[in-house]
Length: 383
Image (cartoon, rainbow, N blue to C red):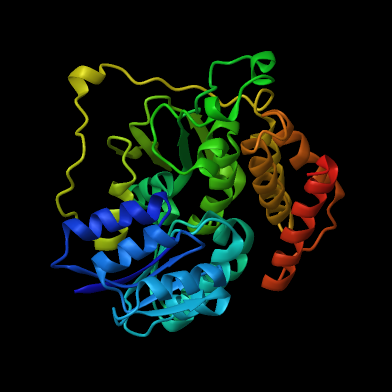
């Protein structure tokens, strides 16, 4: 039995992880679940999967969960200390980091130092702290399996090859729901419009990031840390059909790509069972029906958030944190109807311009910069 901790079990990746567990109860066992404040859902999950521990970031939510799980022999803990306790449970084998935001950094570090493998779905962990995380992965001799579909595709395309022969990474993007809209049309799109992703079933925040192409910029930052390459070694290609999830080109010109239907359960299951590939009940690609695939360049003028992300990646240091925090706050304001879609990139730009430079930030400096950047965006909008 492989014992897993699911951090962020009530979110999109977390719930799909538990679908995989449900299909493989003879091979996977849940030892801990964590969430922020989704009491009813995590109680339902806990009653089904019987973990030893449940951790809630919100203390009031933890108290409610504890009352509802009374008599179930499940320990309930809260706050950052509780999340770290879940991540560092000795009996776990792998920790799925599926929480949203920089709250995932400290638990991920704790899991690594405990010797656990990481199935990484928490983008901020590498975007903001990749310079800390990747050396720890090597120091403690643990494995990091990317769960993002694109990074999993790159990981799979590198499998069995000499990584020194890599020439470039081809990172694909769906283009989101607004790929064909003009700059003028983007001024008036709503949150409901942005949440209608044509291919993927994801959480609200990442769906908006896909619509702005900010998500692709963040994935470039992640890929730099994961695969030890520079920004200029990565080419982003818009591929609306989302069949090629990413690819690697080698020095001899050969391109190896990972393909499949757009289903996040595939990279999740691959991370949990690596190097094995058990059966997954997902839609198969039918090339006769597909007939063609198309590719185009991203447009940084209509989607300037993508351009700013690449700038932040090249600048390095604290700038990816500032970019990420400003975007996170701006997306939250957009989802509440407080700002326009096009204001997201404007606010990111202003936060980056106002930021001080820190070359090699500590975790504490990363978290301070997050608070400062989010605060500056709120101040700019009075929200």
